[in-house]
Image 1 (cartoon, rainbow, N blue to C red):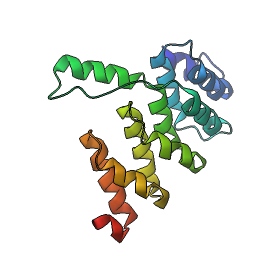
Image 2: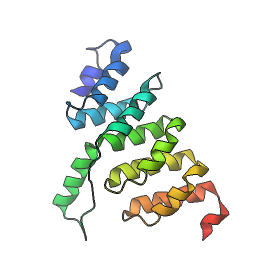
Image 3: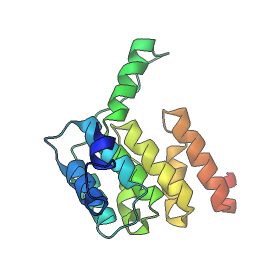
Image 4: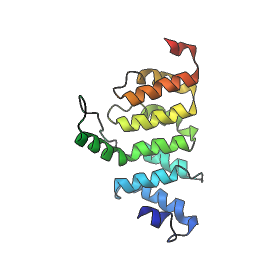
Length: 169
């Protein structure tokens, strides 16, 4: 339904970005719709989109998404996927990376170490790794100890791409 209204023939194309931005920022809206709007905005290189995504990332209440101990059951995995799909801050961090919004670097360096939301950490690290910025080096080194293997793998990739000989140790 979101796509037909926001991106279909029901709306003037000039209004799409404004509509998506308002939806993404509306905390009264369903989190899944907000996350969908953010994913759509990740490919929009228009004025105000980056600022709006930064506002969302700065002000969005953080979720607590933690991995269950041991091997997760199918039901636990589905609950994690459900939470990830609605993690507005996590999707905003990923969108900033796709938009190459380097002005958000200090914010992403902080969110890359969020202690309670592994999806936000993952999306923040993914953005930092894609940018190959030396400022991410200390964060990437610390994320080598992350409990999530995907984050540790991204941190290793980022360190390799940085090519800093200090990373060998």
